[in-house]
Image (cartoon, rainbow, N blue to C red; front, side, top):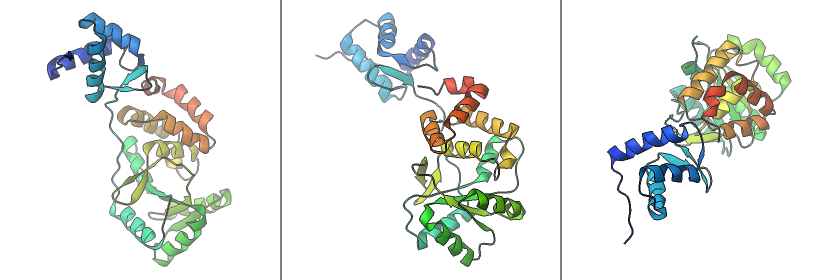
Length: 264
């Protein structure tokens, strides 16, 4: 008969606390370390150890990195911004006319969650495939959206800067970078993941100027502390924007403590 250890909520919690003290809460740890902890606290049995690991993973306490390495599951939450009626309306109008395979939409207003000083001017970023960007630009203009801008080059950026900050709720249409980290939310609306928003903020020295400097540092710090962020996703996207090394340097210089808990 197979002997399976019984873990109640009470002793599982106690065991979990002791395990975190034993291996360090923010570290990845090997199966050998888990076995050492297990053998020190329970009668050593390879069969029971197997079920102990099974229970820890089923209870979402640890996760496997590979066949020999584990890490505690983060208790941070997933970034899920609210999409307002204005953004929903834009998506509805655009998706009704165009069958977009790759796109996302987001608002600079989302960054205010992380800042000390609230920025009143809100920018709407609609990123689409390059071959339909111009068609969408004219379609939204024909729908009487007063402030629509097409950003496909550095020259466009220079022109936009002259007018954008005088506009109310400007919509900036640009080319989406392939394999951008986005997620489907609110039916058929694709929003960027927080990793993408942070990288875009780091890379943009013009349109998001209000969030640069000390504000940018505060945004990164609060985002890293509150939300579950995948550094690999962030760095892969930064690489596609040719800013991977600069971003890594920025994070290591300013947020070593915060990123240590995210590194695998």
